Length: 420
Image 1: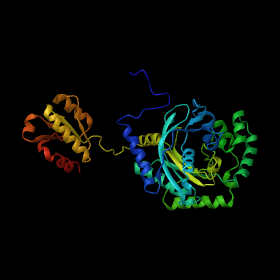
Image 2: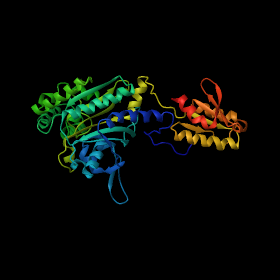
Image 3: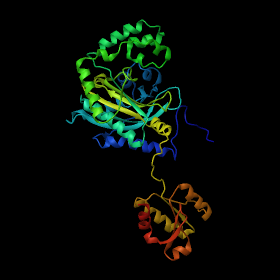
Image 4: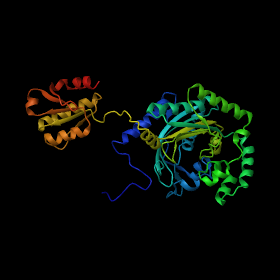
């Protein structure tokens, strides 16, 4: 037992389970790579103000969950709690929006950090794959991102998820709704902190999960009734495009999401097999975020999908991913000459794209074959002095137990033929 353990609310990814996470990341990113999205990577920490302005000072993320600290040089930094603000900051800093090809389409994968009460599906360190389309106001972009996320989940074999969809209006119609909602909330029996939140961002109160609050919200004004004609038309076009693509969704007039920067389209992917932490991903349009962080007007839309929760959702459905074998061939040398020859063979197999491993540490035949079994390899290469004197090695099928002699210089071709 080590003196140290992983910090509370975090986890280590170790084989063989780590292969699932890699497969999920690859599956989520695959449709993005095929749709014009380029990869971007940003630092794990940023200026605190980037998140305070972008995510919202009234949000739980900023007020309660952000890991903020002061550097030795006096800079106020924070571990990134989400990806959108960082990606937009990087795009603005690199002037990607001035290259003349809007929208700027980017995807990313990384770790994020929030100080929350740990439970299954909610960690203080978590992994996401995200996508952002920056600089264009087009309902086809909103629809594209929802469709690509749906495509990624279905490619993984996930079926029992739902897509919730809503519109949060824009700077023209949302202020009118905001006033109506605040008037309604002031008449309720809410605690001091919730009333304070209602004054700063009343839409966040709709997202309150407490039963006593939700009970009082029955009859609250609905944003749908306050949408301006522009927002109604935009939302209907998003809905029509998603429907035409054969992607099912549910209208959810209470869907708000936990970030202040969303406007118009907002959506969430939920899985009912995960208990209270049912959201596996989500996103929406954030037309004013660029201006909030000091940039020009750049209407944008994006999403982030949780790798951790997607893995839990797959497990809840009993979906077994088809993972490539970590090792296809395991070499077992008997004697020094065999070690030299088989090490060279393994090196050549790897160059040829065959996943191969080697029995290190000078083990005997019995111990080395145990390692070959544990590796999951389909074939074992066994050679001793007598075999090598004849220019041969023994190729053993670990599933059937059949064994045959193969010429040393023909091993690569023989294995490639067998492994396909």
